[in-house]
Length: 161
Image (cartoon, rainbow, N blue to C red; front, side, top):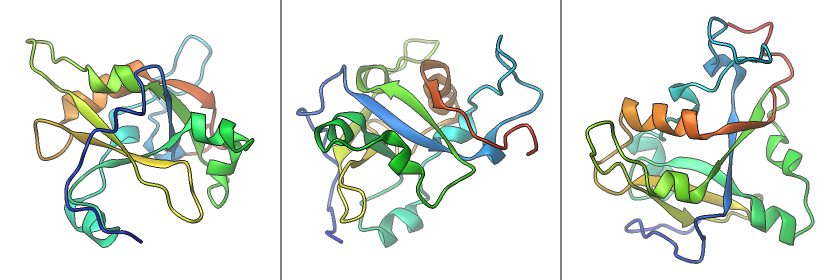
């Protein structure tokens, strides 16, 4: 594991890049469903690692783990590989540009940065971090949930609360 001293937005990850986020069915609210009857993505689906957890992973601060779809495609890997070891989880996607250019309801700059952070087991791994605040606020997480869409719906979400 390589330790990172500070976050840096990786410009090689363009705004049209797709970020894939593993989603636990436990973060889905059964009272909030979409038009297809599937549970909607919630703010909890887009939480940062805590500062301590990030530090343990060699990261400089709170951030959210994602996969870079382009790396998966380049390596001819199925996105389902991100679910290996997480059989009950689903995958959501959000465009990098949607994360980078988030704006709050009062025009606040909620920009997120994206940094590649490959590991031996997940060469597609990256992190999303808050540019202007120490960690994501509830408003930022809600905005990411609204910008995201399902790619793979969790298998057991109808049974979890």
